[in-house]
Image (tube, rainbow, N blue to C red; front, side, top):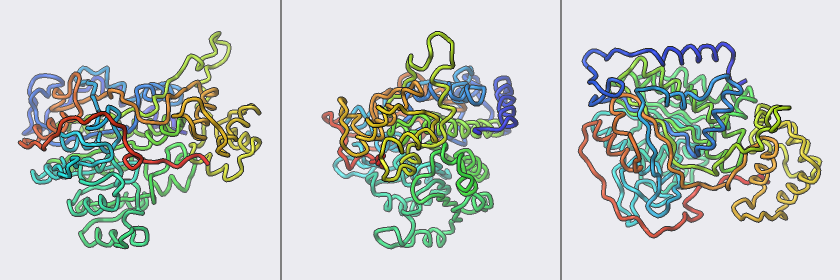
Length: 497
């Protein structure tokens, strides 16, 4: 179950309390009049939350799904009803394309300059930009990165590193050299001597530098607050939430995004000033695969991390909370096929409740057996959908690399599985690729008034520096002739084979 009845009632009570509760300013940090009593105030804490790859359609489907299974909508969208929040749309284009990747998107926040897709805070001529986390560290701020992806992945790295996005081993070293105080996510293979190309035992180096290492949830729970943390809970990315919920061993070993966020905040709250980036990164991976069930479960997990941050803001009102995404991916949409039309039966969308596994897990269960009968059995066990014989034969042809889609961007077995299940869930997709959507952003707390209207992605960096009292500007270059990313500039996800 996504949440127990008790936790749901607790959430409902918190929602009511938040909507009517006004937090008095902390002693020594008086709030000025204005939006939410914070006009002109300066935050001591900045929380930057990113649901990677969340198109507006995916967000909408997740909100309806939340109402279906939790009895209430997303906390993210409930914030739009509060008078003390500020909303914006953000143009996230990269230096060389209106369709950004996560590296260029995060670098725009992390440096105030647009870079090419695939780059992390490096201009095309090789000049390295000074990342936000280095600048804030020099001004005395502590820093944290929390993600459900590999900790070296593009979005967290964009705030702290200078590299190519694929240079994860280099990024892992830079985190150590730059002493990022909290690192929680996946990606142990980039720290282990037996996995790294240079055979360097980076875990030993982190220990030698005073870091506490956690590789299980219980170890994170016991992490000492007076040392920096490196928590890595999977060899690669953390499991999709839908798979995490279904596996007791995973639940015991791997913390949720909300749990990692809560732990990070407890540690960082001891500091006078800190910045924390929290990423729900696997929403993007699910959308790339056209896996709506995995996407909405990970968005609900992200929403629970938002709630943790809102609880923190109750205790620490001099906290700026910014919630956004870096780009759209595949643009899921709940179509008219999601309803029966005559009201005689529940809409197809309700079938999402029956999903029990991600496409990655379905692929594992399929193995090398691509016969239509085996496909039907595995898909029905994972989703509840009884696949018609003709459709099973069609999907089998793609698994055998004999299928052919009229739209080239849909020419894969994984995306065809998403199209197949669209008949069952009532959710369709445009492709398996990133999209050029202007993304939503909502801000709450001191300094929120800066994040209003139609923004360019690079403005966030300058707002964060201004709020921290730092006068600095990285070099910028003119936008390049439009081009798409090369294969080396984007993450390649495993295919359904």
